[in-house]
Amino acid sequence: MSHAMTQDAPPAAPLNSLLSHRRMPRWAPAGIAVAAIALGSGIGAVAGLASKLQWCLIALVLFVALTYLITARVEGRRQAKDRVATSLVWACFVVAVVPLYSLLQTTISKGVKVLDGNFLGHSMGGVITTQPGGGVYHAIIGTLEQVALASLIAVPVGLLTAIYLVEYGRGKLAKVVTFFVDVMTGVPSIVAGLFILAFWIIILGFGYSGFAGALALSILMMPVVVRSTEEMLKLVPNELREASLALGVPKWRTIVKVVLPTSIGGILTGVMLAVARIAGETAPVLLLVFGNQLINNDPFNGAQSSLPYYVYEQYTNGNDASFDRAWAAALVLIAFVMILNLVARGIARWKAPKTGR
Amino acid sequence: MAKRIDVSGLSAYYGNHRAIEDISMTVEPRSVTAFIGPSGCGKSTFLRTLNRMHEVTPGGRVEGKVMLDDENLYGAGVDPVAVRRTVGMVFQRPNPFPTMSIYDNVAAGLRLNGSARRKSEIDGIVEKSLKGANLWNEVKDRLNKPGAGLSGGQQQRLCIARAIAVEPQVLLMDEPCSALDPISTLAIEDLIGELKEQFTIVIVTHNMQQAARVSDRTAFFNLAGVGQPGKLIEIDETQRIFSNPSVQATEDYISGRFG
Ligand SMILES: Nc1ncnc2c1ncn2[C@@H]1O[C@H](COP(=O)(O)OP(=O)(O)OP(=O)(O)O)[C@@H](O)[C@H]1O
Ligand SMILES: [Mg+2]
Image (cartoon, rainbow over all chains, first blue to last red; front, top):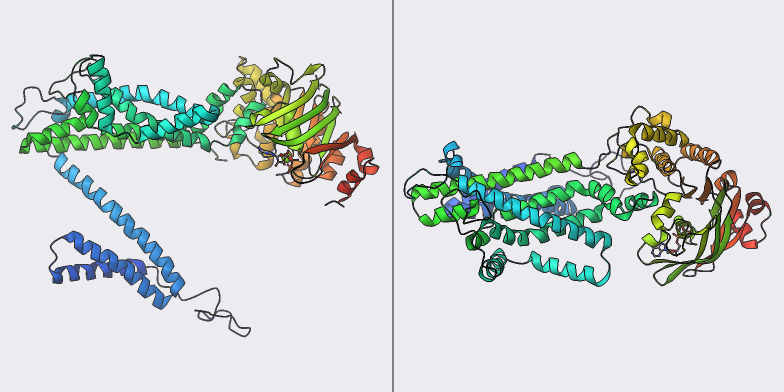
């Protein structure tokens, strides 16, 4: 498609111009999407495909193909490629969001059935599992305590490790530490659980407890904290460190007073994401905290429950009342993680370096 | 207050690469010394050896002596942190601390050094430093606004205020005006003229007129070729360097007949 501009071409002529070309109307992508969905449903219905998922896939493929064909006709090949890239991004976005949406929708619609003050405020003590009633109070307590203990162990260690790696780490030791952090990132949660089981319960002879679970969770959390903190510290410009050092500020004070405050928002976000990750772990709890129907406020003594464990336990009971409780507990867990994320975002925004005039 | 710097036989390395070789010179107290020379000849490197910032760069290493009055900066047992409190530095690009307000930026050196002072005392020092950096009138109503919200020229003067707030004996400036407009440049040049009453000032600049305007003495650096270490060619009264230098290369460089 070469629209060579000639000397005597009228300057505003759309077809002969070098700089402007025929454009599709703004609503064109939406129109194509509607057409693709209609066509997809039509084909699906005619072909007698049972699953709506297949209809959607056909519609998605049609959407991308139609976008290319129509744009190529109207606007030209290059624009067509551009629009196909855009429509692919949209298609992938939909593919990613649909499961998330349906997951949330299912959890909420099934979870709200028994979710009330009574459910949040009571344990399963004295409840016959086939009957409605009972609650997650003991599991919430367990999750809060285990996650808090795990964070208390993993966050300081992770932070200090990251500071070492970014600010001080040179040579062999830093390489070795980085290597082990990488390895730890890949440790499956059940392996972390087994390790603590062998070490803490079998060799050292301690009993099941929330703390044992927290130990395993902290193993899972630490590499995540190290990695995210490392990335955030690397983002701090070297000039700030030099500015501080040139004022005669010792290195450790430079780190505490300049480097960390500059990156605190990102570091906190990373920590919160790590917390969110371990809050949903079931395997270590299964092995080390053992599960409990009753309220146990002491994380250092005796079995506890936790939200993911509670969901698992109720599900394996295999009756309707238990299924309802499982869904409600899942909803509580999602809400917990969501609140943590919102808090992290809030803090990150509040603490972010300000550039306002 | 101001001190004399006496450099002898100084070489600086980045790993195995020797960036500057065998530099000896004297920087007079209460005067402005300008460093000029082509890009890559080691002006910044040399400047950073004068307050032991060179060794902050990974692989940075220094040989030779830098005497501050009668103390060797590279002597055994000398604390680089103490050196940097005595020899302050202003960088090429303004780098205020983004998390801090204007006030906190200026007070940063005092506070981060952990010297406990009363609020009123810090207030006084902040005002004096900002006035010293010709910035007070522009920011006195918004001392609690973020320092990163100032214009580039204001930020640079903020950095100068921050550097002089800790009352160093020597002030090193690495191309402090290279990112600034002519008016801010002029403001900073005036400021340099005032600051030399109290401080020993060393300034790196690529601007010949600037060197001629602000400095009492000028040092010309050059390097023999790519990958070769930079060397001090000559140092003399600015007037002489610009009118009648004793080395041909200096004259070529100043008059623009170079490379
Ligand atoms: N961080 C570093 N690591 C390795 N080599 C460096 C580093 N900084 C500078 N050098 C080298 O040292 C030499 C001198 O650099 P320097 O920055 O001192 O030059 P300069 O005279 O300040 O140049 P300019 O006028 O462009 O600022 C150059 O060859 C440069 O490549
Ligand atoms: Mg330089």
